[in-house]
Image (cartoon, rainbow, N blue to C red):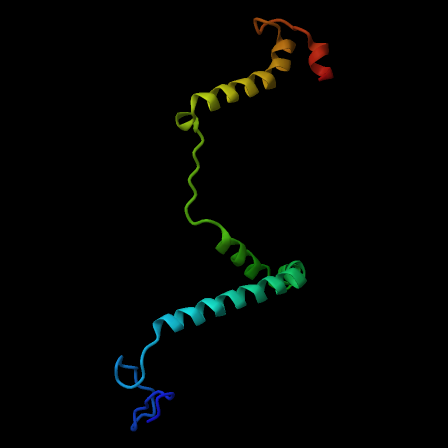
Length: 130
């Protein structure tokens, strides 16, 4: 048996697993380097293909197989979505003040339209022009 070829079972013809130190050393570092390089090259080729035909491929998929298109979109969506509507508890004092200032500027036209106490007409013309 030569060092470069893996051993085969004489009865089945199947390749036998490599055993470290049995004439064919396992080169895990070399394998990882090859896997890394292969992954990098694959991703570069995928990027190149995407840049040249990405949008056209999506439109072709939508036309030919909308079901597969929806499966692809769904697979890209996050599995767990954390919707935190009330983020005020996590905001700093400066962030709270900035939020209050923005809200104040947003509602000023509406307050002017209602009047200072919220019951009158206020300056409706000024609010409509803004």
